[in-house]
Length: 537
Picture 1 (cartoon, rainbow, N blue to C red):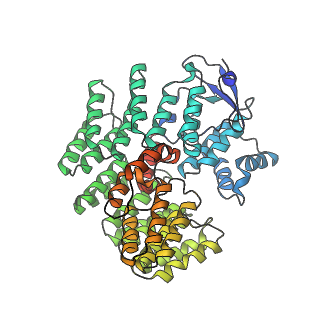
Picture 2: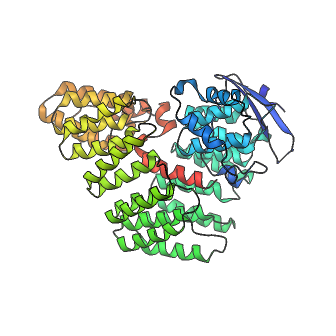
Picture 3: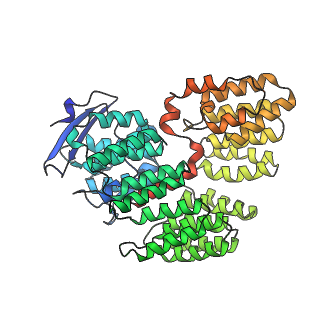
């Protein structure tokens, strides 16, 4: 049963080898001509491996070195294959376990394209690498992330029916949820129910994540009730999402009730994300004492070489306004890890900005500049945003020089921050220019300006009587697809802009970027969901 006959040519040649343990222990080899296969960032591979190797529990060995070489490529356009071939030319015989560990690290740090290319490299060597159903699911997920939902759907539709097990369905469901494609996610979930693929917590966790994104918290309670009725055991991630839903409802008592139920469940051991979730909600509710109690308990749950809990501790103490604890955790973090990642510096500088310790933030930024392996404009954006807010536009603008010196590129947020500065300085044309730069920046496919900035820009145009720039800005928003989003429609309706919003919405609802890929303004939210999926592996 070869997929060779089932899959039509797409974009470049891949070899693919998958074993489906439900049917046979023999490997099924097939060649994808031009298919772009993508890895997944969801909990599928650990919970439903069925024969796949446990890549996470074995020692790192050479894979860390391979990951570093891939991450630090001077010319990313060469692709992962160049690095992997170089490793083998040096006499290293790469194993599947090492490469899957590398893929996990690449996914963890959102280097999805490189992760996909590692799988492509293995696909092209079917005689050496046998890939399992969990690998196919991971690749489907990466296809969605790198090339969009339609490519993932195409990959899914070309797989033989017998190959589409619950992991493959779960991967596609995760892709739909990541893109907030509610109708498709709900339809696929119904299909999974009909096939009996829902008798485990993963699809429910994924759907609950969707409803959290949509702020439909009651739907989370309904799914929890369905799980209990079907006697599907809640896992720690189910409880964590449920806690978050109750907290988002503003119910501290509801959170405590769930936590008490969680403690009575002998199959559950609350993890550090349990306490970070509760701390986040308590901070939002202004219950700082309860939040800090959760953070102390979070600290006791840190195990192994996991950096993420330190990032959350630093960030949450910053949100709670506790500068002393921010510095204490930072010191502990640096004592445990000799090298701090960009994520760590981002968390620290963000928290110091939040507690208004700008001198400290500048000191940590200078330290990062001296040790960084790659320049991350998201870190510069933290200080730029503060300077613009405080009216120091020239200092904010100077960061463009830092970025250029490092051989990096400003991202969409960098340009939007500068646009905010120009709006504050009543420089309409310059603001519009920055918005346009933001839309064309690297990785800006899903970017849209913040509604508050749209409102400020339109208000400034009206105050200045600058009808030409206003019309140009409105057309710019139309081309981005903003008119189909409720948040922008409400902002635009408050101005005398002469736009028929209904026509624009009808025209743009089929835009592939908007329906498939979501909105980068949800970056923090998506990171939370992504972390949940990774941790569930």
